[in-house]
Length: 217
Image (cartoon, rainbow, N blue to C red; front, top):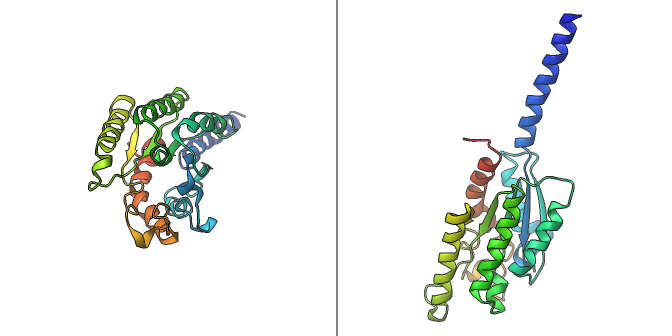
């Protein structure tokens, strides 16, 4: 009888350890985005998130993406969308934010965008969810955007320093101002652009997911 209970306890303990490994190796990543993440103008099979997930499955075979992408959306919409994500049954391992492009297009005051980002981060961190933010690239040859670009650079640095947010400067940089990788509007990546985006952001996102799932020290 003692041997039976010993084996039973050993079985339970081993399963507990294995379940922990499975949880760490099966991250659930929320992605809040706009028309780029929605895949405007391209096939649903050719969006960067599809290519990215395929690459991440090498290290995380059971990784899941919970995607909330709305064309034309701005940073002000993100808190409610995050609340909706957190209200679902599955516990998020982390949240990736790909917003602010429409803030710029709509003339949102940079200070308001900054306030929105801090609200987004504080909401996620209050629920112990790490945040990664994709940065918006700026042209160094556009004098009209010089002040805004400087503000955004400081804003991203502040989010990283004060809130511990992981920044992703590579997010759009690989397709920015690249006619052969964008659609005719010059804003949205074409299918090749989405593929290049995924290849570019895969290494830093893989490192981030490994860190937040404690797969590596």
